Image (cartoon, rainbow, N blue to C red; front, side, top):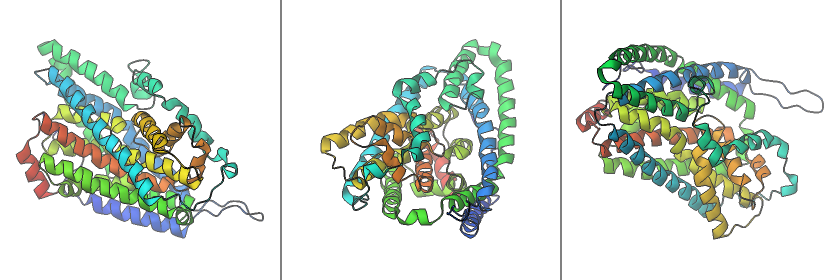
Length: 437
């Protein structure tokens, strides 16, 4: 089953170029009109760049507004169209196996890089000098990231609450799977509902197409706020950590994901070029959720079946966060190194084991990686949770790399699982990648 006749991202329209221009303009605005910190003589002055934040928030909220109904319709229609319901279980099982293997590899890579480059060495921070108030909000949020609470949160209080209670994608996926299975079991009696959802899905994709035209504006405002509010000076002191993280993400994408793509039978670099508009949107907004639905559309256009896309992409946004996983172990060891805490191999493996659990509760939105880091340190007594105050100033700058790595990783995962399930039209894949977008 294919997408509605009106894909949300039309060829070619040059949207990627406009988004890139928006990102550049946003950075320039942030540099030219930054916030001025308070001094003894003058209060803090909010610059023009930071005042653009509501524009960015509005764009992201418009995207989030459409995600739940589109995922629901897409997954229900995919499942209802399956002749063999056992296929759904196979897709989910294979996706989870892939997620666990690759995300665990990302955690290990972060650990190895931190030991090789030691980005926190020489920082000479003192535990008694840390300001817990800077991270109090993240620590509070992290308390809701325990494994049991995360699993319980997958079940919504009511059917409607899944759509109105904050947009938990796994709640939507759970309801869609159950509803789609029931609709498939009805046979011809469910045809009217099936036709209604088909029409509704077409309309929803049309609305998303209109919203995505605002992506350049949203990206510009988001980048202007980030640079204007935090300033380039916050990058200098922690440049080694940022450099190590960005380098690790690039190597992970090029080597690990590139190798997986090669083994699957496609070029990762052509795939990245194919989704360049969405990547730039993620870069500008620091949120992979802003490009979730466009990614689903393009994956189907590349030859993936709707049922695989509908299961793998939404679940991957909670279980397959490669960039977040690299960040977790790298940042945890950076904080330990900066505070002069010498961790043994056993202690580092304990961090790795805890991160394997806490990373499964992260969401693909700005700040989620920081909250998950707080949750990880909260159950590892060797490193004080207040240590995350050392990197709070640059977390926003690293969130772009996290989001982009997560985003590309989920696209590759969908193509891999589709190939495993023989639900990938390889001729269409090669033709689309060769043609570009």
